[in-house]
Length: 407
Ligand SMILES: Cc1cc2nc3c(=O)[nH]c(=O)nc-3n(C[C@H](O)[C@H](O)[C@H](O)COP(=O)(O)OP(=O)(O)OC[C@H]3O[C@@H](n4cnc5c(N)ncnc54)[C@H](O)[C@@H]3O)c2cc1C
Ligand code: SF4
Ligand code: SF4
Ligand code: SF4
Image (cartoon, rainbow, N blue to C red; front, top):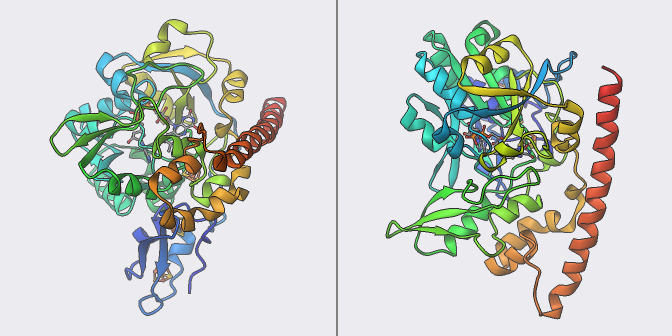
């Protein structure tokens, strides 16, 4: 039997399913709501292809020896695309450019409460892909579709989580890489799809997710206000997280239901095999006039990446890399002590036995209450999060200092 990634290290990239010639690997939902894989020993012929492809066990690194080529403060110059993007519409601008030149792009969209990758062929398709979906996404089958597009001679822009980009690069034969452009996100981890499932079950007139975050309340270099919006059965929109903590978005921010691989992410590296890395330019003080519409951090790792950023309708501006990384530790540091928190350990059990409002208190930190029974948890949350934040900041500060000392 092949030795694939363990429960704690598997990223759910589904690369192994894609390459298995015997369809011996299948996806299932684990007790924590995340996607995992299992091998059917009856069908497996022990060819080892899945082991050689899995980015976690095949021994290859997602990092590059050389430092990132350049860092930019960037934003889309198309107003509508910029508004629809979670940050500044960089992905939308690059995807639009690739599609206009006869290629295709890959992003994710919500299908009910599931978040899935799909091929974007037109500007209309692009609208549903724009914006961050704060839940684990399912890449099953997408790498085969990418391979088909590349074999057909089309340029493909693949945008997704770093672990999924690593799988894409591992599954797609190197001979086809020249037409493949990979953009990965700065990634703080993915919350359990169980949060959306719990929300759906407790909202009888829920019809579809509209967005997890948009710029109705602007963008600030110190963060943003989540506004999880969904559509009801009668077609009206409801802003679920307007005045109170919400299980889906604050549950994502608490990081207490993440995949275990996200607490020890091996893809959070300053220099990567992707062509470009994009995220929020937290901490920015140089472009205040741009803040209401969002400002991105774009890190370029290759010539292909540099060319696409210049080809697309994007404003590129200088940024101090040290300052940018200090405000966004997930570029360089994938470790988090929250994997040891009892709330994370107990999530599979509690998610099955507690009511949605109790789960919102625990996993979305909705702890402002007069009920003294919740006070010990409120105190623990305050202390444990402060200590965790301090430890993690100290660690990433050291990593960033070492990074720039060596360059
Ligand atoms: C789970 C998650 C965690 C993140 N954590 C951080 C962080 O810690 N720091 C930071 O600076 N930025 C983080 N980001 C990135 C940030 O939210 C924006 O996605 C990024 O800045 C790109 O914004 P944009 O406006 O250029 O593009 P957008 O239009 O927002 O789209 C970017 C691309 O992301 C894809 N995408 C959205 N959600 C998912 C998903 N769940 N799985 C796979 N692909 C997805 C879209 O399909 C699209 O291809 C995170 C994003 C996600 C999805
Ligand atoms: S060893 Fe080969 S046949 Fe067995 S699960 Fe892996 S890829 Fe499939
Ligand atoms: S290839 Fe991806 S889904 Fe398969 S075992 Fe490895 S990490 Fe998990
Ligand atoms: S934190 Fe790492 S392992 Fe988790 S989804 Fe992001 S890239 Fe993948």
